Image (cartoon, rainbow, N blue to C red; front, side, top):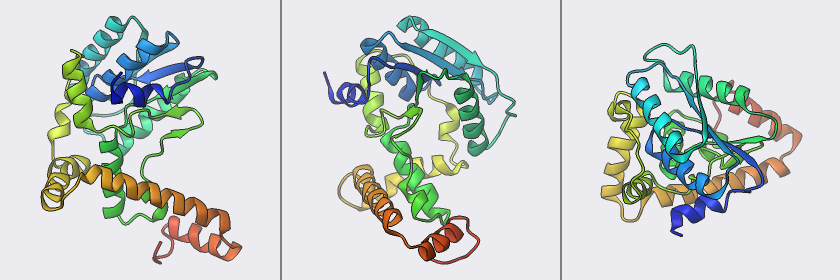
Length: 239
């Protein structure tokens, strides 16, 4: 068993029922493939975002599910073409959560690379400490088993294991902030500073999350009022 499989498996309870958000991309394709080997309590959902190449992604998602012999469905959204990343994300989660049964847990293909990109997005937008915690590993009804694994590692795993997937061409459009951070900013920073930037930022995110939790546990009523004001951006103080 290699590191990717170990990372995914250690986050699974095979007695639970899981639903993979299957996009047709490499992340969810690898996730579905590894989870399907571990449990039969798995199904998948594709959300139609109505963007360019959405139909091609849907076809690949259908193929992946058919190859894995798991129950699969595609669900419609009301998204318009060229919707923002935020609108697509919000619509996607609303549809996925509405579809979940009470005894099911949603699995998404967010990676270490996504976590680091989100950190930079929030930092450059001027978010407060809470936003610098980036993407959480899990919530009550959601798990992200790939959050410690880089995108490059997943691409290599998919190639080695002949896992079919499709690159979303919009990932190469650097007019989109996340893509600019992924394709331009992070590689340039990586060139200038020694060490893996994703690992360094991930360690920082962990420290921030621990510190934030500690501060929340020990804050005074006065500090709570200040924090809430800052987090709602009603006041321009430091955070």
